Structures are given as structure tokens and as C-alpha cells.
Amino acid sequence: MKNNPPRVALFATCLVDAMRPQIGFAALALLEQVNCVVEVPMGQTCCGQPALNSGDQDGTRKIAKQNIKLLAGFDHVVVPSGSCAATIKKDYPDLFEADPVWHAKAVDLANRTYELLSYMSDIWAWRPKDVSCAATATYHDSCSGLRSLNVQAQPRKMLAGVAGLEMRPLEGANVCCGFGGTFCVKYPDISNAIVGEKAAAINATGADLLLGGDLGCLMNMAGKLHRDGSKVRAFHTAEILAGMGDGLAIGETA
Image 1: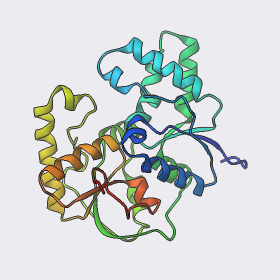
Image 2 (image 1 turned 135 degrees about the vertical axis):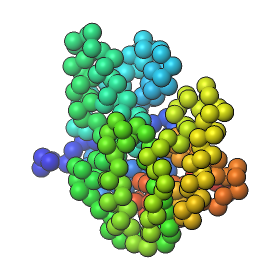
Image 3 (image 1 turned 120 degrees about the vertical axis):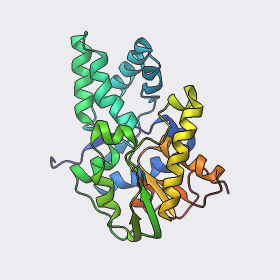
């Protein structure tokens, strides 16, 4: 890393902004611990993944161009979501293969973009200090983070440093939860069957908490667990690492 603190854009994501802003505050807290100068660029919107998954490549290119321009000039762009980070890193360059100018800009952005948990662990070798959580937890590896960005060991390494937290293995931790973005809307019966199997595996661990790195997946699993009467509570990993695991879990109301 260079001597000057990196200027970092926090790409908060639509779901975090609309459904769980605390994840954004947790990400900010973690980034500030490694002395990043963090900005949340106003004007950021969706990464474009729903449009892309629905086959609207032209619409996705318009979104991508807006984000490419918005995120220019930052040393790093950090995203608390494997799926959104993968869209920017992997899909944006592919969208502009026939346009050399925009392809170069997309590749430049891709090279500066990181998923939050991998950024904290791989770039900064960060480990929590004076963070505690007296609970048992299990971990779900979201598809995009795992398969597109190789995010698997990093969150577990950091969670191992949380005092009082006992991690329990989850059978099929690397199997889809059934969310899949627009998949759960297009194929609700299949999605519900998949998340039903996932919820059963989570309950079988006997863990108090379900952790992960993608809010969409966590909302999907938390919803199913709640409907089934389970007492397992879901949090984004960043919340636990930032010492914010003492409040309402995902889907809980006061």
C-alpha cells in the first residue's frame, strides 16, 4: 500500500441503502480502522445486476457508464456485497468488449473494486481487536462472492478473532440459498424449496447466529427461518466484525 491513506468510495448497494443501512455504517467503521479516507458518492444507484440478469444489456450499459463516471478518481471502490462487486469487476468489462474506450474504463474500475471482506483481509490483513460476541454462529458462502471472487477463507479468518464467538460448520455452506436476485421472483416455488433445505441445515447446526456477506441472501434465509419459527438470527459479517451485533438482526422489528 502507498503511504498516503487511500481514498475509498463505499458503494453501499441498493439493498443496504433501502433495507439495512447499518451494514453501510459497519463497512464505514471497518474501513476507517485501516485509515481509509471514505466517501459515499452521491448519485450511486444500482450496480445493474437485476437488469443484466433479465437480459437487458443496453440498460445495464447505461447504469454501468453512470457508475464508471461516478467512481472515477478513487483509489479503491469497496462493496459490502459479493454479487454487486462481481458485477462491477467481472461483468462491466464484458459489457463493453466492442467499445475500446469504455472497455478500458470498465477494466480500470474493475481493477480498483473490492468486496469488503476480501478487502479487509487480503489487502490490509486486518483482524478484529477488542470485539466480542458471546454466541455461536454458522456461515453461508454466497454464490457470487465465492465463485466469482473467491471469498471464503477471509471472513472466517477475521471472525476467528472475535472474542466469545464460536463458529460451527454449515452443511452445504457453499450451496445456493435460493435467492439468486431475480431468480426468486421468476421461480418462487423452486426458490422456496432451496431455501427450505438451507434453513433446515442452518437449524441443524444449533447456532444462535447466521452470518454471511450478501444482504440479499441473508434476507432470503432470515425470512424463511422466521416463517418456520426458528430462533436463529441473521447478521452481515461486517456488523459482527464492527461490534454491531447487539442490536436488531436482519428482519427483526423493535
